[in-house]
Length: 447
Image 1: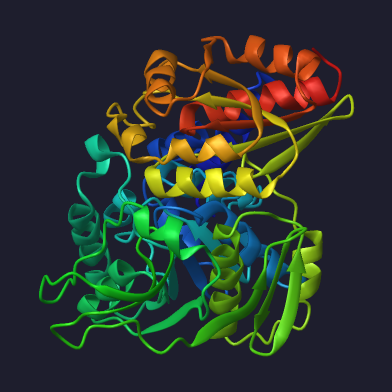
Image 2: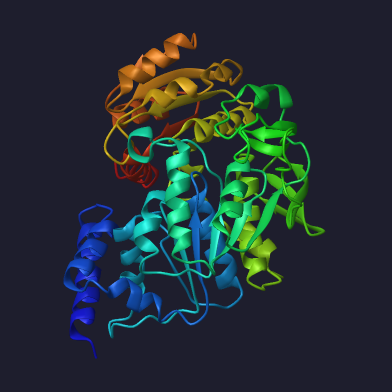
């Protein structure tokens, strides 16, 4: 019996429970305390996972993919450790294992599904050697924290060098993810969308961080785009091209949710947004690569409920409110596409903060195609958050009349009471948790 490890787990559980009572997230504090008390806690608990450890990484879609993969494994009758809340840096990963451990200091789990921040892989892979790593995509994100995309790729290569037997499940439609997989030397399989779904005229205008060949530097040519740099591509000067997809989606329809076909099986989910096609496929490909046939995957999708601010739906006195995370140009453009899918009148609040987790540099707002909101039937635009004035200025240059309200609670309460009854709230990281709490209280009638 390791007394210090048990003490670390008990302290983590107490910290998590205390923060929850105070209405705070608390997960990272639980991990920090556990590490302080017993530094080797992560590697020891991870070693107790009976079968495989999955790591989900990439710029966008990590939380949804990871939670969906966890649900798929649980549907197959497995016990799974998972950081459901999206706390994906070292302290958050430690917390997932510590909070998932028993009071005896041990893990009772067949698998672990762990979302990991790209920049944190170099720290976490010194303690965990995952069997599988899912790469959702690689986009520019938080320049002051990650730097340009090539820096992120170098960090991921460094992490993978520590775990050369980790098998990658890679978005084959993303030339950056494919290049990373090839350059790492790790074994890999690919997934992607094997038909054109999105309007090519709009997609061609989007900022494409990965539009140049990672092998020879020539500009890639595309048979079709999906969004950002995702699509069917090839280099005109060397043999770099989208590989043959191991798991391909076809027959995609986005009306009244998402319908798609994988390996001859048709699936439906109530979620919206084309980017969720990739999240579904990434989770499916990961489980299939690990040997699961996934006979009950349709049930996983039927039971799936969006949470943690990922197209999360609230009903406040009969009024429809959707909360979604928007933290970089690629993700925000997909948020706009999801809003455009809703043809009814609506109101919109955009909340932009610039705390450390968000990134102090918010120049990325100028790479977002806000002009597309002209066709969205939005009745009222409100800019909120710490950088509300910057957001309002961006709206002005998009020729969109807007109002500014720094207090997001007041903005939400006003539009719930006086708006169209159909409200979208788009926000970046540090605003997400508080807005979620506000909306839950309003939904429960506690405000």
